[in-house]
Every structure is written in structure tokens, then in C-alpha cells.
Length: 306
View 1 (cartoon, rainbow, N blue to C red):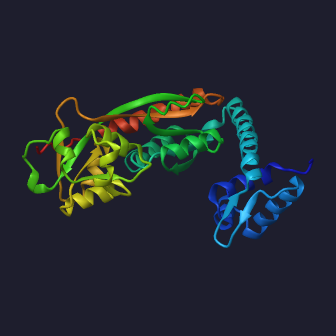
View 2: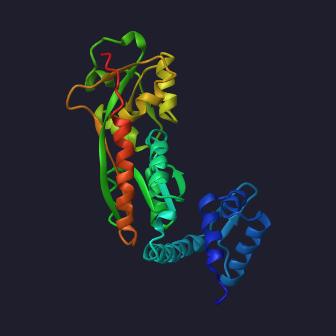
View 3: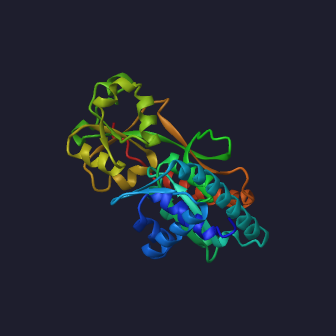
């Protein structure tokens, strides 16, 4: 099997990740027929099918699942060699692949990108916004240089660096302004709006409210913090949002914002990267940019109308 190429492995990884030829071809910047041909040639070289094909999507075969583990390890190793070369030439900061969770991205990214562009002239920044589990997977596969997530992640293969801690605030209807802030037990009896499953912020809010899995069905869900705040504005219920989200999310929503008494619910945001990356020193420089962006955002005043 001397004819397997890295290009074929990258095409295979894209198709395994996206599950559709069209999306995988777009991600690889090639035509769909060209991608199909490369996958077919790879399967012929291996002597076994990698995918089960249907009209709407493709799925990995049992052999494909096993092959994917090996292929991703090879691609990650190749990417680390490239990273090592970039670091040795002191050219790493011409390109940065950032992963970030959705409950941080809208509020920090503009300031982060502005700071990075001002600090590292000509830097090329690539952004991937998705949930923590997916970011961890893509880091392990070498598709990202680092990610900004809520800590802890507790993945042995990743380094965690704490950046800052922020409190959660309560979002209520405007007519609730001035009323006492409900405690955990009172919140359990209210119509609580939370993000859908998969978001770490959802689990943090449920933990603060001491709502067990048996009560989760009684919680109303939304796909974003913006949706939750607008639902509160419409009089549907109450929600919790992180401090950094307040200025943006309440700009167009008629709601009341209240702080919780100490100890208030909070979360720790940090950066993660592979233990094996040769870019750790440069990533510490990036952490400084993220901290500066967060400091500016967290210093914005929050109206305490409770």
C-alpha cells in the first residue's frame, strides 16, 4: 500500500466528519466528483469499503471506524511536525486556528481578533465555534491549535490554562425589577429557560439551581442565549446568562437584570491545547490577548436593578 497519500487521508477525515460529500468537498476546497474519486481510489488501495453510501449521507463502515482512528493519529502527527517547523522559524503567529464555545464567542471574539491583529501583524485567524466535546475532539485530531472553553475539561492529553472567572446573572421580565432575587429553591419552581443539551452552560445552570435529571423535562430549552433572553422579554420565563453576555443580549430586549447574592453562580473560562504541541510558548502569548479582551468586557457596568 504505497500509494496512499496525505491528501487522501485529509479527504477521508473531512467526509468522515461531515457525513456528506458536498460539505466535505467544500471544506477541502475541491469539487465533489474529485473528492469522490479520491475516496474511491483510497478504498481500492485498501481493498475494503470505508463508507456506507446512501442518497442523503454516508456512514463509516466497521473497517472505516478502525481506519479513522489510525488516519487521525497520522494527520495529527503531521500537523504537529508542521507546527514544530513554524515554531522553529518563529512564524507560528502568521496563522492561528481557534476553537471557542458558543456562550463565549459572540462576546469575546471581536475584541480578541482586534487585539491579535494589532499584536501580530499579518496573522491569519481561523475560527471554529462549537460545543466543548467537539472542540476537544478536533484538538486531538490536530484541526485546532487551541480552544477557549469552560473549565475543567479534565482530558489528560490536554493542557488547561485558567483565563478568568465570571458570574451568572438573572434575567427576568421588566415588571420583576426591584423584587427580591429568588434563591435556588425558588428558581426550581419557576419556568426556567436553558440552552439545549450539549452546552456546558446548561449543566452549570442546572447545577446551581439544584435541578436533577428527573426535572430536566420541565425546563424550557433554547438554541442560544439570544433566544433565551428574547423569550424572557416575551414573558415566557426567567433565565441565567453569563456576565459578559449582558451588554449585547439586553441591547434589544426589554428585561430586568439582577445579580445573585454571594456566593453567586459562576464559571471559569480557560484555554486548552494538546500537551504534545511545540507551540506552548506562543499559546501563552495568545492567552494574554484573550485575558485583555475579557478584562475589557467584564469591566462594562451591569445594571443591578434588583
